Length: 393
Length: 187
Image (cartoon, rainbow over all chains, first blue to last red):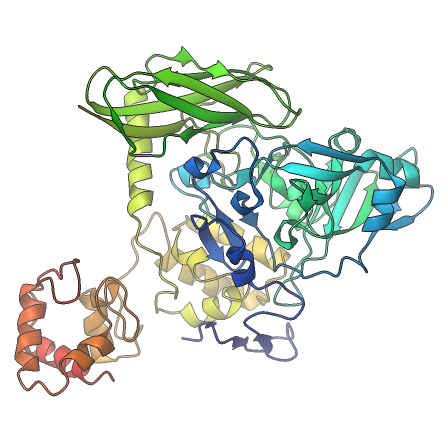
């Protein structure tokens, strides 16, 4: 079989789509090799696919109040570009009074520099919870997200510098990533103006108060906090202000979610919505699955809860598979789009196997379901998280 | 009702934890080479082999990937769809590998028909030793054929590690002799 092996392979020219055989070098020029990306990651990071590169850590490896760089998930659509920060520029064009362009240094000097801790989560995070499993990266229930600190400038300040025309209603981001073949479509996503003007929506050049790693979008990325990750364009070079949502495959055929449940295997309904803010979600970060504790000793169950828009109002846990629920202690809220830590003290009275379920609710009346509604692309899994541990005499 | 949903959820989590690593190559069959040539450019083959989909979902995927720039010509859509929805269909079991699919190679047919390749590859250790490792171990041993025929038929464990080799009582003598002869030639 003409499999594309590690040593590179060629694709036959055919039917005018490619004039010459397309060579697939192991590491195309101008890209960061996968091995270099993974070398900077936590040893427990699970690589879900090598082409495109996708990787995440399990829930118990997220037991930090702020996600460290080496635990942050990796989700490329294409290759990882290796961009020279000193030559990189961001252009703002479209429905603006004046097309403007800035280097990263100019952004830093010309606009107030801000920092915020905020959730970033791939739309497909948790996809492996859906039965049957839809196509796409099989992220675990807790995979494909993180909540680091982001450093940068407010998008709205930069848009105001360009001056918005009256018809300005959406902003589309385009990044410098490219595919192994020239025909690979650029990943372009647009966000509505009210989200673009939200003060936490940022042009990011730093992560956790240090440099932004290349795999996470250096030299510059968009941060659309709390929303499906694809709205936070990495390697950002162009912002186009539009009077309508951007039309393109990554807006119209991908990152869509039906308004209601779909029969598994059925197609996306034509009136499906663009994925925006994540629904309310939580995970148990301690203990790890199958941990062992001594009977009558204190076990401090801990976890994280978040929602794309709005605020967490309550987290509950169940020790009887969802028959009854008790409130968890919800710790102080931090930044607007950051996850919140919750905890519950348990003192198991008898030996055995204990299963803990966690579910969060938001201030808009939404609560996590036991199982999320099936949808064709497997987005927005927010079914209750579940961890079991043993209690020994 | 709630109980059954939770049981389903639990079953799903156990199943995914125990999933073997999906194959890194597409199952041989009509259209496999075309699907490999067109899909295994931007994706590793596991993007296909790890998830079975409905025919409608494959059709959507092909359309979506063409929008994203996959170099698939209009007359290639039908054979690729036919291949994917034959071998990676959630609703219809994949056919057993045929002589035509494996190019009529009798050893390949035996390896496929008896699921040998689920645990053994020619030059890479998977669950069990590679065929090359087996050949190297028994090089110069003139009782090797008899030992291996017995081993394949009765199964065993401990020679190559903890994973046991299951018995294969139903393989015909002549087929076993042919397989073992081929294995010992892998160098």
